[in-house]
Image (cartoon, rainbow, N blue to C red; front, top):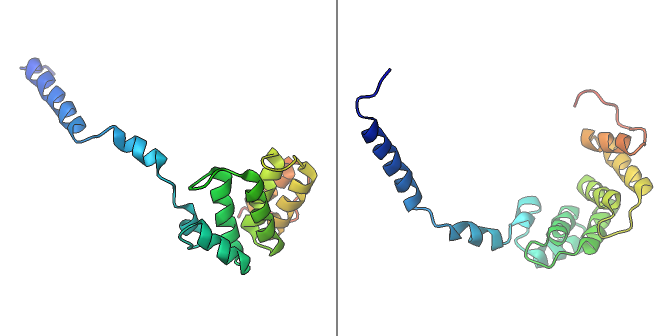
Length: 153
């Protein structure tokens, strides 16, 4: 197959690529990177850290996890993994799987709290018993027998 006008094709392709870039403002990506991610509202339905904190104080464990994520990753607030761990542990005390799992992750990594693989295994085991296959796998990886029967869930 031969093209009669390879120069025209090259010019057309060049024009298309320039046109595609014309509407793109490279500063858009920079602005998006500095804008806080609205993680809290995605998880708990609270609109900001203050609302998540208020909901957490009245035993809404999903709000505790949302506030913990904001602190852990520094979304709209200075990163504070220690505070995140406290919030996750509080949600875990109320038997909320997400709180237990996230607390276990921080314990396993030693992020914001002293590394404690035994406690991380215990928490993964607790979440495993609640039905999380991922937690069962993490518990096994850390050397704990999984208490949740694995049925390919």
